[in-house]
Image 1 (tube, rainbow, N blue to C red):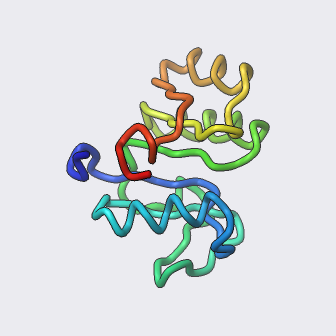
Image 2: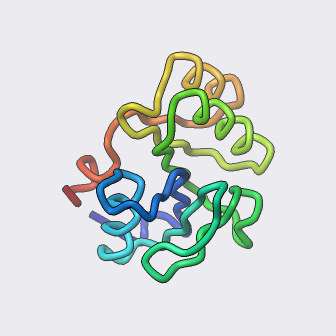
Length: 123
């Protein structure tokens, strides 16, 4: 595990509901020392951190986006990543779809469809 591997990670789908994966991933990335920002259209605060309403609202462009939202929303995130020049999109299990992966691919965005937390040894 290397928390310095990324300059900034954005988790899209952060929830203030502790039972949801968007909350657990955000919480455990923070605990592990990863540089992470949360995104949810509702905004607000989760675990004392400001939650951004969109990727575009984050002051510094993330170099990795982790999607924890339904597949149709992940397709929109791929479009937003393309507009913002974000080159890596990690689709958590359940957030990916063939359409989302294909869309990201047409934009030249590297996609990973696996659990980031398991792959990085956090869970």
